[in-house]
Length: 77
Image (cartoon, rainbow, N blue to C red; front, side, top):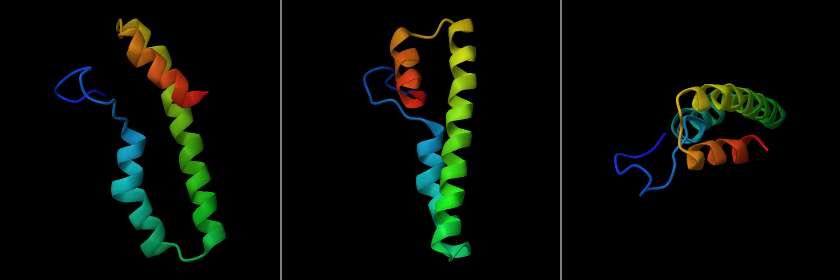
């Protein structure tokens, strides 16, 4: 989840990349109803939080840096 510079650069997370590169394009080009777009967006966010909560179980088992843990805890708060 870090850049090649490790902790020197901002943390990245896959949901943000998915949103900006794929999901919003799909919403704009394939789903034209605003209510359906919002429903899809809310569901994607719910799944993202669920994924990050699973990651918070996985990270300590791999001795993740406390900064990384704090980052993902903040995302799921």
